[in-house]
Image (cartoon, rainbow, N blue to C red; front, side, top):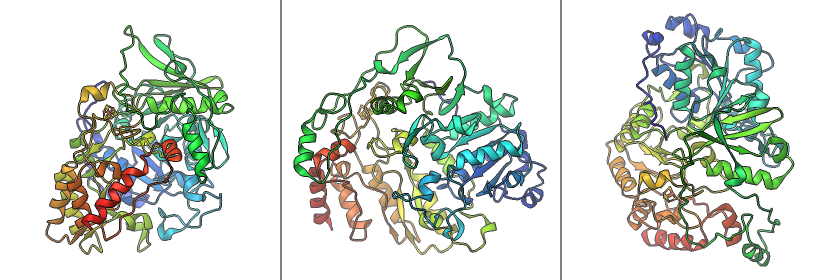
Length: 551
Ligand code: SF4
């Protein structure tokens, strides 16, 4: 893996002389007050603007500001015309478009395809303030507003739809979102590194369409480079057959399904996990993996499953290769995932000058998503669970990126000192999972050679560090702070990991749960659990016994 340039070592853009904005401006009036004649980058967001590190667009905006750029936000614009997209004038560098913290279709529709009338990311919980497939609509309107301004798309909607993907709402496989949005470039996953590099390269005169080599990005190209070696995806994973669907509520049937070989031809449940060692490719040529085309995967579920599996096999930033998927006469070119942020970089991102409240334009309106997180602290990113139904690995990756204990403690103190309505209770110290803080592979060298889909399934890998003492230490320090009465843990717990550290379970149960703890054993039967890549009920029973003992 190439060494990544440190996030905060780029020479600042000349506009840093304007200093830090109290809030990123949402109007011309605010730009005037800041002395700006224009914005360098304008963020279009499907969410209300809450200046808080839990809101993706605030993070990206404040990060770009720290690089010296003047960043404006147009939040939840009326998408019926291009006019609202001109509200801050023409951006000097580019538009950055995101549907918000959620996919706009999940935000708007229930699993029964009924319309939701609420939206937690909108003032007063009001539904209908963003369009369906917001990335497509916003990108189109940006083009109409100023057709020569480049459009960069990102956020969870763009990230998870970066290659041909099954779309529940239309019940079909859709093309990469790049094809339909006509954006110049897509950033996927946690996009700090990619966005900062792109902004500086565009500022130095490079055309966004020519930026083809940044990790964590995808783009469309017309021709494949002749000086790269091609590896067909069937040399990495053999397309199998599709198992018959079984009724998860019928134990005889599920047991039968468990005994049947899975799509790859072996029954992995219960077998000892093996680290997959990758031999370096012969020769010095750069290599890409050619996936089955959109046209093929949209018609063939086996090839779709194969493609999805290869995508997951290529998520380790240390050994992932570029993926290519043909769409009609063009090629989707997906660079390897971004290099994870170091602890110092993550600390610096979380300690950007957020106001930690919604923009004052919203007045007293309630924004439920803000109310839910305003007293909680995000301590890490990523998940090595690899559960087959979950999008975290596909978005944030499998490497755990943890903040330092000091940085987390400083944020707890900021909540105590700055957040209106704080009464002494921190509602969560968590992340994608409550108890993966500082857990990683025992050795960087082993990690660099690993392509396992999960560090904890079918069994917990012997190379995984499962010592929870950094988390235990953090909890103890946080609850001793003056003005802090209680620290709750509300993020989901991996109880199969927790039982390996009884001291952690004792600490958690004794001090950080209110008598109840929500956990999700997702199912009770081995067959569905194995398809979800989840542990069996044995560890659940073990955890429950510990919970009862320490309660
Ligand atoms: S701990 Fe995770 S990354 Fe390390 S060898 Fe095991 S599966 Fe691979």
